[in-house]
Figure (cartoon, rainbow, N blue to C red):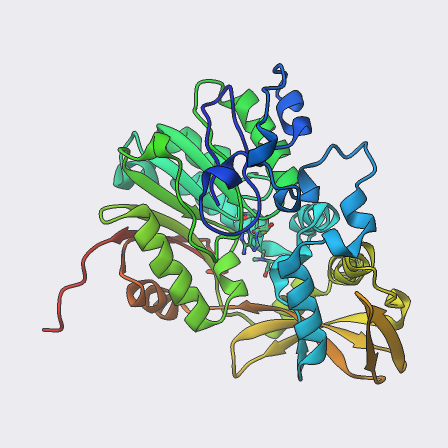
Amino acid sequence: MAAVGDARTRRVAVREGAATERDVNAVTRADIIRHGETPAPIDPALVDPALVDATLADPMLPDPKLADPALADPAFRADVLAGLSGRPRAIPARWFYDRRGSELFEDITRLPEYYLTRTERSILSAHAADIASLTGPGRAVVEFGSGSSAKTPLVLSAVAPSAYVPIDISGQFLRDSVAELERQFPNLPIHPIEGDFMHRLALPSAIESKPRLGFFPGSTIGNMNAPAAVDLLRAMWETLGAGSKLLIGIDRIKPASVLIPAYDDAQGVTAEFNLNLLHRINRELGGTIPVSAFRHVARWNDTEARIEMHLEATRDVSFSVDGRSFAISKGKTIHTENSYKYGPRDARLLLRSAGWTPIGEWTDREGLFGLILAEARAVPAAP
Ligand code: SAH
Ligand code: AVI
């Protein structure tokens, strides 16, 4: 999937799959109108209604897709049905990020216990000049899982980019953050891509000839296990190309007494973020899950060096999703997220395993969080 268009006529393509002309033209009228333009005629033959993501629709209009499970994202349905049928029960964390989930994640980033965001931001601010001197000007910045793009201005202001390509699965949130960045950087061409970065994504042709800087902040890499993380970093290498650079934020291993509260905060925002997945299943897949019969659980798994989030049934429950029946006994859980933490050497090894050579590294005074700049190099054979 891909997005094309210059800063004036931006189009956000939708859903996973190849970057076909058909995908690229699957835009919503709401998208065009919101950018203050006369709606361009869309060739109906090129628009597959099943490809138009509900998150792109005007939030003021009732969204028929959300009311009809038959129109729900097939990948979401498949992951949920497989995840509830499998043992242990598990649903991929990327499905947290509907509109509400993205908003709740933003609330998490402001929690006193969630040290990651403010620490990474402070590292970026303190070392912006070093980062800029190692990257050089004129690069197209490609951000993976851009979310609200809250940290992006720090990077864009420092590295004098030639273009910005934010990639995120949460379409409406992506569009809102692009609108905000357009106000802050009116002369910067921005080419958003709504899509799953775990799948191969074609970059906009407008940045074809430009050197690239990948930006992958927030320790989102930690939400993948090691094989998936290496696959993704390799795919980024292929997508961005030899000579590209990657600025990546990776959270570090630290005592459970710091980690657990970061994922189980006193105000219950992380619990709401986790439970929102069940609400999303009910909303989009016609589920009948009794959400109040589940509680949020955050555990530190020291052997795996990861925080695990689960939803635990507080009583025996039975429900249906998309017409299929499920039962979960009291005390059993649905595993909803892993957040892997890395020591500094582990993080560098992870990058090297995927062909990225670290060329700069920064941390905060307490060593809570690591920011690494790496270069896509052909790796020489062993000695
Ligand atoms: N980069 C931001 C947001 C991190 S939250 C920060 O540092 O604060 C993780 C973001 O990645 C969310 O915006 C979510 O929608 C997006 N995301 C998660 N899985 C994704 C996937 N598989 N493909 C694309 N975006 C994804
Ligand atoms: C996006 N990701 C890096 C967050 C994390 O810390 O693993 C998601 C999150 N889950 C609970 N709180 C925040």
